[in-house]
Amino acid sequence: TLELTVRASPTGPGGDMQWCFSQVKGAIDDDVAEADIISTVEFNHTGELLATGDKGGRVVIFQQEIENKSQPQFRSEYNVYSTFQSHEPEFDYLKSLEIEEKINKIRWLPQKNAAQFLLSTNDKTIKLWKISERDKRPEGYNLKEEDGRYKDPNTITSLRVPVLIPMDLMVEASPRRVFANAHTYHINSISVNSDNETYLSADDLRINLWHLEITDRSFNIVDIKPANMEELTEVITAAEFHPHQCNTFVYSSSKGTIRLCDMRASALCDKHSKLFEEPEDPSNRSFFSEIISSISDVKFSHNGRYMMTRDYLSVKIWDLNMENRPVETYQVHEYLRSKLCSLYENDCIFDKFECCWNGNDSVVMTGSYNNFFRMFDRGHRRDVTLEASRENSKPMQVLKPRKVCAGGKRKKDEISVDSLDFNKKILHTAWHPQDNIIAVATTNNLYIFQDKVN
Amino acid sequence: MSGDNEDTQTADETTLDEKEVQDKVISPEKAEEAKLKARYPNLGNKPGGSDLLRKRLQKGQKYFDSGDYNMAKAKIKNKQLPTAAPEKTEITGDHIPTPQDLPQRKPSLVASKLAG
Image: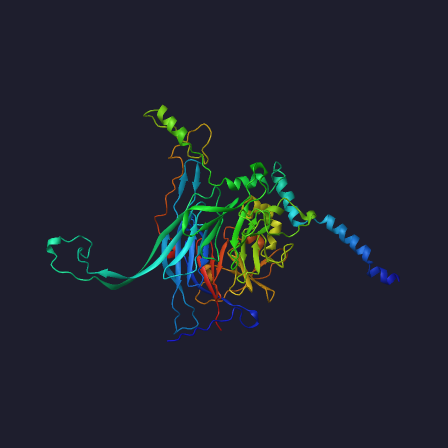
C-alpha cells in the first residue's frame, strides 16, 4: 500500500512555531549521579533514531515508533531501542593520566544496509558500533540440543535442516572498530565525511583523518602544537567536514577564529584556505574578551553555504564566502555580560554550549542556563526563549515563552538574572533532520518537544 | 535664535557630549574585570593565555608513579605503605601514592536511567 505522510511545513502560518512537550526521559529525583549526566545528543540521518551519550560511558538509542494513525495529532514517540556501554574508564599508567569514559560525541553513519552504524568517542578512543536487529533464530540443529548442549552422536539417527523461526526483536550493539592511540590531547570532535569512507577526529592541538575500515593508522592533517609549549596561545575547540565537499573541513579555536581547510591543497592542512574572524574593537577588550570569544561549537548548514558558531554569549552565522565578519549575530544571554566575574569564579564561563540548525536552515537553536534554550528564526527575525522543565510536561502542553529581566523593574512572569540557576545548563540540543522535533538535554534528562501540528 | 539653541545642539557638540559620557560609563565587561582584579590582585595579565590553556590540556592528570610505588614496596617489605590523609584531594610530594589512593574508576554497572 502506498503510504502518504503529510509533514507540517517547517514554519507554520506566519512563521510561528508552537512547541509542545512530547516526552521526557530520565530520573525525576534531584540527586543526580555523575554517570547520568548527558554529554551528547544526536539524531541519525532520517531522524528515526536518537542517540544519547553520558558521563558514565553509556549510549542509549531511542527509535521513533510507527505513527499512530488513530491519533493524528500525536507525532510518534521515541522509545528505547538499544543501550550499551560504549567506553570504560581507563588509567594510563605511563602518563599518570586518568581517561574518562564520558562520551564526548556521537555521530551516525548514513545507513547502507539493514544495520545502523555510529561513531562514539571519549577523550582518547573512537569506536565504531554496529547496531543490528535480530528477529529470527535457528531451531532444529542436528548436533545440539535446544539449550546448546551437544548431543551424544550415537543418538542421532536422522538428519534435518534447521529452520529459522520468528523471535522477539532483539537489538544488538557490537563494537566493529576501535580507533585508539592517535590522540595525545583530548578529543573534542568527530565528523563523518560525505564520502562515507573517512572521518576526522580533533583534539586540542591536532586533527586526524581516518578511514572507517582501518584502525592501525590515521593521517594527521592539522597540527597546531608549537615547538615550545610556553608559546601556546590557542587550541582547537571543534571541527567538522563540509556536508557535500569531501575535501573541505573547518576547525574553530579558543580565540574565536574559524579556519576552513582544503585537503586538496596539501597533505598537512596547517595553512588554511580561509580564515573567518570578526574584527574586535581594541578599546572594548577586557580580561574576559578572549575567554568569551572561544568557540564551543561549529556546525555547517545543511545546504553547505553557511556555518554557525557558538561562543559564550552569542551565536553567529557565517557565509562561507565572507571571511571578515559573520552575516548574522544572535545574542543568547547578553544579560550575563555584567555577571562575568561570578561566572569566571564558578567556572561557568568555560561551559561549552552546542548549537544546531533545523532541517531547512531557517531556524537555529542553542541552550542557556536555568534549563532555558533559545531559538532564532533567521527569516522572520524572531527569537524565543523556552524552558525544559518537569512543570511544563503535560502531554502536548504548549511551551510558554520565557523572559529574563536584565535589570530594573521585573514584570510578572519574568525571571531576574540573579534568580537563574547556573547549575541547570542546557549544553546539548538536536533538531530532527526533516521535522520540527527537537531533543533537549538538561543535566540528566532528555526532553523531546514537537511543533504543534495544525 | 536663542529658542533654537536651548533645545538643539550642533552635531559637533552632540558627539563631544557622547564621548564624555562614554568615558565615564565603563562597559559592563570592564566593570566585571575590575571586580575580578579587586578580588584576585595576583591574577596574571594574560587571561586566555598559556596558563589557562595548559590547565585545559592537563585535564585528567593524576600523580601515580608505578616505578616509585614498586620501589617503595620493595624497600618496605611486608609493611604497609603510608596512605594519604583522607582530606587530601591531590596526592603529590612526599607521599607515595598507592593504587588505593587513586579514586577507583569502575565502569557503570547500572543501566542508564534514560533507558528506564
